[in-house]
Image 1: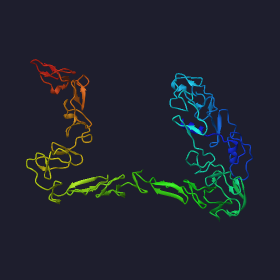
Image 2 (image 1 turned 45 degrees about the vertical axis):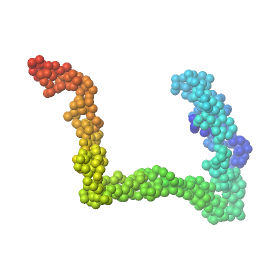
Image 3 (image 1 turned 90 degrees about the vertical axis):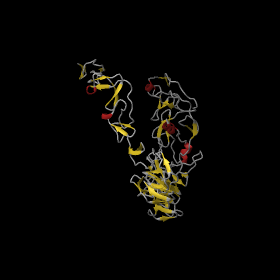
Image 4 (image 1 turned 30 degrees about the vertical axis):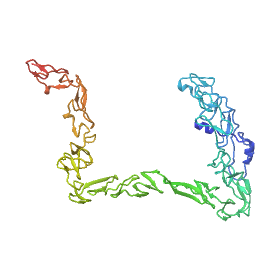
Length: 521
């Protein structure tokens, strides 16, 4: 819908506007003017007379749907349709609606079974093939259904006022540009075509020869291309003060065609995400971006991509103990603990090893990687952090019996006041975790069942644990055993004279007999 609105915003130029572009044809009609001399391209309008309900788009030079005059609806190809078919239904220039896609039909340009909705809308589709209204004058319909003033850049050069408080970014001048002013391009002193910088074909100011303008090109006695002239270089008999792209003199103000003094046009895009590229009056400018900007594998620091770590406003390699990190994160100092030796891993994280017990630290000596500044009470049932007794149950302060607290290494957790290998999805993939203990399927019971390293669970009543899953006690899961009153399967090997049965039947007592293979004898 947005594409339709934007394309329909272009209107045919009047005879007066076309005259300003030095054209003698009527908009939307077949061009009847004689082709110009020389090899300059012909500036044409629409190739044929536009049908009823369409208008000539001077930018694409094609006939497009004109909502104010289209009796039916405008389809996705910007053609005015009758609007009576189920697949293209609509009226009064609204966007065509496919009624068939919702199981409806088209009646009088409206989808049957559809409720039009124009609440809060001035224009655009009502959702059922109709229109909430059409914008008039120099306005266009926004996606929200409101009429907004549209920029007027038809026939203008880059930098020219767009009529709504801004400037035109694209070059839509069919003649030549003199600064931001679009000229016809047919004058001897202002000669050019297709938005190129106007050239002066006469001698004097241009100093490129004595000639005349013919079809946007200078003809006559001219100096060789590249000869210096006032403010630039000669090309095609005209003095180029912008840049030359190999075919024509360009204004030199576009980012993709930037240059001055008749030099070769340059593309200012340096493909660096950490610079802002622009074309200035003196040429290309590539300035460092400001703020936090991401780049491949890091963040921008100045005009460079920092894939190490950032310390203050500087980028560091990120592989040293004093400045450790990667991907543009903040640097970490791994050397601040007096009782631990810190190194930086390839992953950009700190790795610590305890210094030798007895190593001097501020106010004491190192014991177990902790700076001991006094004696911990012998009554401490946890562990000692310096002179402070800790519970000894956390991963960073783990221990018992008044010993020095330990920081559990990666992959271990503090369980029962000692660092033990952690039970998780990696270390216990096929079983379940009872605290830090991994219970594989062979050791699981109905009171501790599970897999994928999750916490063991108690199976619900009526189920038992088999292959690390709680299952029903039935003939499928317990063919060679009996079901206890709690729902557990009692296999032959575990049966007794009081728990005997087969084929998932209820376990029974043999009443003085003996049980063998699920049968009382």
